[in-house]
Image (cartoon, rainbow, N blue to C red; front, side, top):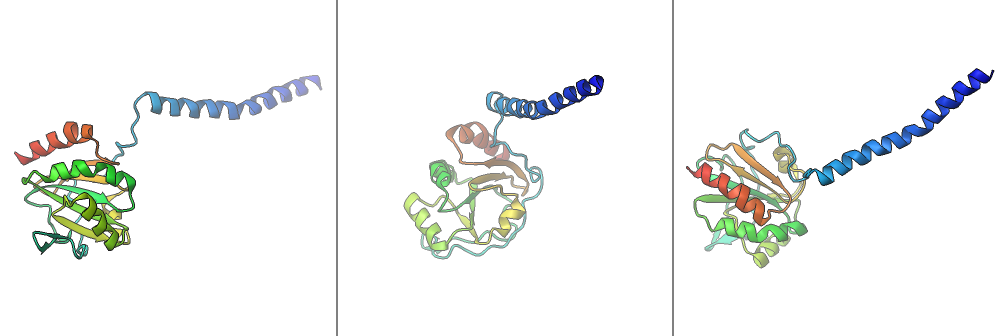
Length: 194
């Protein structure tokens, strides 16, 4: 009898320690992410190296450049020009943070600035661009978020760089910082412009 009780006691102690082992393993993983430089901005994208999805979205009615309506994001608008596609919404706080970087990119006439306005009321998007400036030459309204699914959007903001061949070359999740703009996006854009 005593042998069985000792055996049972050891098993019970081991089972009682399992939650501690699980906790320590998870804590180690989280610690490695925090200290080891794991980045939530570098999420994998199945679309890198693939053609940009061809989508047909309505215009952002009332958004004009030099008196002309800004065209919609539709058809195969990505071929022939290096394009920066930004997914934004007026209700998105980080979209306001990255807006100066987008305005800076829009000064380069060699690239095409496009936007997918995600799950937003058109009047709010117009107000947002009216207050902060409009860096885009093409804007498509994705009120239901269906086009964003085809693009593999995790959330807003997200930014893509598409080559002249219509192939997606870069994706950034979150607001574009000066570091991302100057160390990743601009060098890639210069390379794609050659």
